[in-house]
Image (cartoon, rainbow, N blue to C red):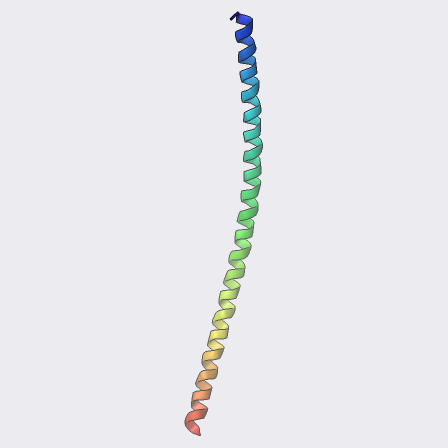
Length: 77
């Protein structure tokens, strides 16, 4: 093999490496964007979960209050 052949192979290897690095950079940017989107969705869902838990607690208190009133009415009858 001549030095020109080795130089050609090295340039080809460098070009292949460059292409792969560029692909990794694009993949990293895509994953970063996706992660940002997922974190925003997670915050929205956590807020929704908290609101639903509060509504559930309010409904539970109302039902317990109604049960108490029914028991008082029943004991008065």
